[in-house]
Length: 315
Image (tube, rainbow, N blue to C red; front, side, top):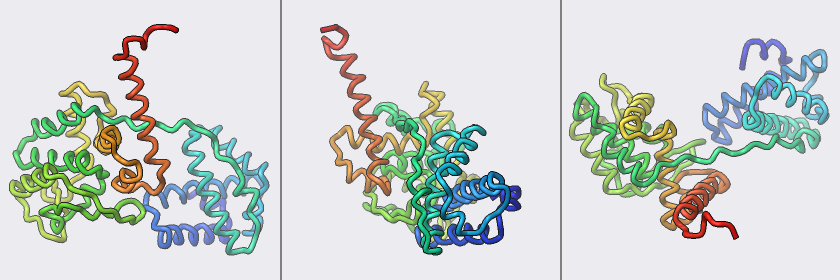
């Protein structure tokens, strides 16, 4: 929450916002980054209302904001360059705060809660091809200065592609997780727990790294280490991926997160069940996982148009 927004918001509204943030952090299990983003979204909204209406108002007024004022805020946000995607997230935060406040105040917040978010084109995941993903795993450690660092980088990217882990989840593993079991218990976004099968190749890659690592991999400390022994910085894996994609001639979209996308897309292409893939990825909503069906369909059409003998002819 910026200092300017804090000054523009009434003490009562500021306390209410902090109460809501505490609620979603503790009871809803929202991730720290999400809570921070929501804090900025709602504080900006409250500051706008104070300026738009010519002064701060009581909490009751915040639950009965007319649709015209809400649209004015949204127009203001778009006017300062906020994307439709970011505005949709901000509106979701505003609705969440307003609903919570209305429940506490015994008020009706229908006007705010019925507001429609701006439409935007969801970005499709950009997975690697099966061959490209295999090439990344084979070459990601080639330019490492020490063998243990090469083994470390290969182990991390193997977990991303082989298990569909987020980079934060892979780097969140501790010495207690080694040797990796056949099924790994992962604590994902929002504190949601899921079980992920671990391929033999991933277990072998991590075991090789652990055998070469010069640091004591105690149960309490992080499993993957930097060259000074501290927790591995995710930027080092991003840099290793950048060097690898440049060497292999892959696009800039070949990032660590693209390996997770590739995991899901390749499973789906091989006939994987969408619900099962949702569970493996730890998606809260099936609609998030369904983005991979669009990727699969797009690839299918691309192959069709290149391969079908009549794809390029007109009826």
